[in-house]
Image (cartoon, rainbow, N blue to C red):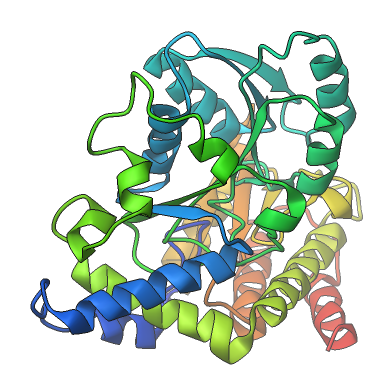
Length: 390
């Protein structure tokens, strides 16, 4: 008989688990959207979002997921035919490049396969662009499919004095790993509500520097996508391009209060790093006997704090078993040559040591039940990692 009772454990890389406080904050009737109280909540939310990104830059908010953020950037920054360089290290970087191409942008890919991207390759490529024709360099801080983490300050340094704008997708990293937009010289930053910000999906955010704003409107800038109007809004509806997403505003405001004012942003980053190390310790132990279980990213410094990609023979069977028997949901493998042998373990947003140990324990039970070869001592290794970093 199944033991999948009680609260389910969701370990997929978005939408991430929602705190009860966030759900309760959303569970209220809409007030007068033309009234001052809601306008003040929204203004406070804009300030919270800038604190979260480490910036005083302009901010445009959209009703839409992270793909909407991608399109907002294209619509405001580029003309059809503009050359851009997209640094890719997994499925989502490539998907972003595809979206730009379908918009009419001239995309060049600097692809590293499913491995972490290398700043030196960017430096070498931009050195060949002596005329500065490349308009923007675009990179995911974390590619959710592979669990890679790009060193954004290193990529900024690699750009040297090239005039291209640096555009960073932080959809899977914001609120999980350090982001200091202004200090790092990021010109445009994209994120969304459903991962590290532990809020319902449906909102995306684009922060953009004055240098990016100076490019003005382009042939792709329609009234809906226009970030200038949103960033300089005078009325609540102007921030959101029409009727505001009231319940999502309440939910996100509560979530950012928990992150910024209660736990503290640096403590949130530290928590994510500790949980990630515990997962890595367990996977290393499972793979120690030559079982074929391994972390996709070999270098710990290049791994994401929010999600871990794992090669695990029999992963699809394991995922199905832990869901059915234990009520634990793991992420599917995306972009792998053998997706049936790949999975992802998310440790993002509203999660802690108890959740992660529960996920790893369910996986251990599944490995035993399905007779999937694995090394010993994984749970002990994860527990020791948590204990050592306390």
